Amino acid sequence: MADNTLMDKLVSLCKRRGFVFQSSEIYGGLGSVWDYGPLGVELKNNVKSRWWRAMVHVRDDIEGVDAAILMHPRVWEASGHVAGFTDPLVDCRACKARFRADKLSEFQCPQKPSKHPGEHTTCDLTEPRLFNLMFKTFIGPVEEQAAVVYLRPETAQGIYVNYQNVLNASRQKIPFGIAQIGKAFRNEITPGNFIFRTREFEQMEMQFFVKPGTDEEWFERWRGLRIGWYHELGLNPDRLRWHQHGPTELAHYARAAYDIEYEFPFGWQEIEGIHNRGDFDLGRHQEYSGKRLDYFDQAANERYVPYVVETSAGADRVSLTVLVDAYREEEVEGETRVVLGFHPALAPIKAAVLPLVKKDGMPEVAVELYNDLRRRLPSFYDDGGAIGRRYRRMDEAGTPFCITVDGQSLVDRTVTVRHRDSMLQDRVGIDVVGGYIEERLRT
Ligand code: GAP
Image: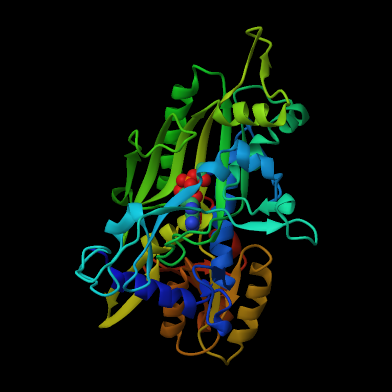
């Protein structure tokens, strides 16, 4: 059963605290397009930099790229997207709503929400018709067929077309990978669930090029590494599971595929796909471009078109997962405390500096500490209102540490450090508190 209350609370918190806003809200919003506010952009950047670190920085067999969103239109013919990146669409003649024909069971009939579209007596669905999800635009001033280009619906193709360039420039040998983070666009028929399925989103994709015959082993290895990454983010392991694609679900390019799914308030849903794409992509680009994309394996003295193992996650979807997983409400002294219990590495603000009262020299000491601290880590200063209320505000923003300057600070240059989750406090020297926090962030 979908827990709409939790999603409603989260959406409202995200707006109130500046995580996520509806796009163009003052004009009534734009369907399923969202903007990230001050805290949201930090959260999403932390998700992306953690992925980049795990994929590119700590490994010596993966290189990064940042390819353009607009690509030669032939790319999308070769990839199969022009012919096959479609969803079946049905309209209801009675209520004028539009649905994906293959996902009717996931939606409510607008006229009778206890039923699915097509099940209510007045429903009158059209036959399904195929709808291509790519957004089209035009290069240059003339809007004609010859000038059509697409906003990329996945970042992966920017990697394949640069495979040979990266190989030449980096002197990597197979097996090796190329990683990319960037925007993708899909004209989804039924987007929704906040930032879960949107029309503009960011992907974090990695294509790992391997010798044919070693693909299944690498596929399993990447499955293990990717689920491990989510565990290290601190996500509840009971809310993560695998979904193996059956033969009817497999994408046109995939020999095998697993999704990592998370249990959202609206049900189990994919957050990342891991695919064994065989030689489909390089083979097709070789065919359509006429350029050789095979690899000469010096050690084995043989030529082959590499196989690809892909890991493909959505930065927005992972950010939503982190938000949902972190959200909790607790009863503390008869009041409800709302906490976003983020992993400290993901928290938008790492430390807040709070003078206990706005007098007696405490703000001066606190500002001095804040000026030092914000050069070292994302910090926040707040001297407005009762200390308990300020702690609650920071709990809601997911800030792991609150540093309070009190009367004793003026005597012995110590401060209290309050821990978000336990609410316990340590007393720490003002001159070492930055290092104390940095040490606890190194996880
Ligand atoms: N290159 C393979 C590929 O794009 P996908 O399963 O279509 O595979 C991969 O997408 C990931 O991209 C998904 O697991 C999801 O996290 C994210 N994603 C896909 N469509 C999305 C959308 N409309 N809104 C937000 N994220 C999306």
